[in-house]
Length: 396
Ligand code: RFL
Ligand code: PHB
Image (spheres, rainbow, N blue to C red):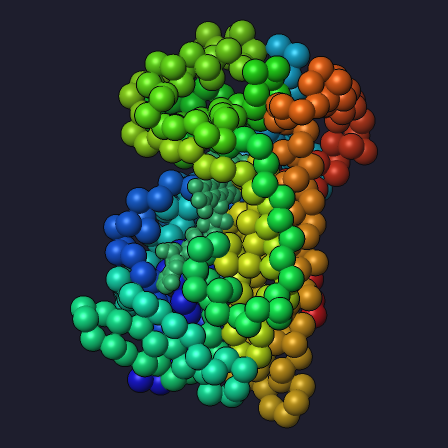
């Protein structure tokens, strides 16, 4: 079989790329190693930047997002027993973020793909990438015990941090940068009304907490936990008790609790692999970089990468002569400029909000001073808001 673009990985990056390419008249196939239900069962990000919602509109899947998504014009920083609002709209010149779960984004993209009769191979096993340093790359996979080969012009590696795409790049061609944080996030999803209309990021001497949501009736909460902690050690009651302790008293009193419908622990890591292109293989999303979730940049970066990639491939197929490869040639450097700014922001916000075992009372005091500065200095709050709503896409 032959297609223009083989997309490895059917998470949000792979599916969004598939739709953007389809809208541009470019033929692609998506290969996903898991089942559709498995992909939709992963509870992850919840906050979308305007750059991301614009790309989802461009992909033709904005309808449910705009009717069911919640527009958020601000969020709160909790510390010292009180909450302090960061007014995103005023500070960022009219921008906002949208609360709409990654699961729903992926569901909408999958539905649009199926409605157009576009091909996704779920449970594609032993995917392998070949000859991407030539003009005739190939991707092989197995499905139901049969081997298949796809010939293509380009391969998009959208297969996440543990995928095969980055691992296929020859050793020595890749430079990686990494920071592993000494804690994780314990997350709970529950069908209870959120404690507040807006998100609350709380710094507390016992550790970080985040109050988020998926809708007016579904809440998502997180507490910082030890790296070696286990979900089985946390009953629902123990989780709610710990969350209450980390919130301002009037919020703790208002918190509505209920049975968890999902509970999981995620480690926190910053990771970047450079470059993001090798010949005719492009890495996008978590395949190329990971950020800690403080600030909700992971999914948004995956979207901006594939936005750039769709633009580069569209220019390639629409153009003629050597100039048509300009976008392809600039893909990696253009993505990485935005990636590193989000890596910096997520690292900074993580450092500001979490309890670090090694910094002790001094570290806590410095964090409190910076938080106090943030809520009293328009300059500092503007920088936070500008990064939180998302930096603009660049031209090549
Ligand atoms: P994904 O979502 O990991 O999708 C990659 C897809 O590729 C498939 N795959 C393969 N397919 C074929 N062959 C192979 N060899 C393959 N290997 C893997 C996988 O099954 C999967 O379906 O990457 P993508 O599309 O780049 O999207 C990135 C986002 O998912 C990610 O950045 C965010 O979810 C990160 N993240 C969070 N971001 C936020 O902004 N806020 C959050 O609250 C948040 N929570 C999280 C997260 C990431 C987590 N991970 C990765 C463990 C919580 C967790 C637990
Ligand atoms: C979430 O709702 O899952 C969420 C929101 C904001 C973050 C991280 C996660 O910064």
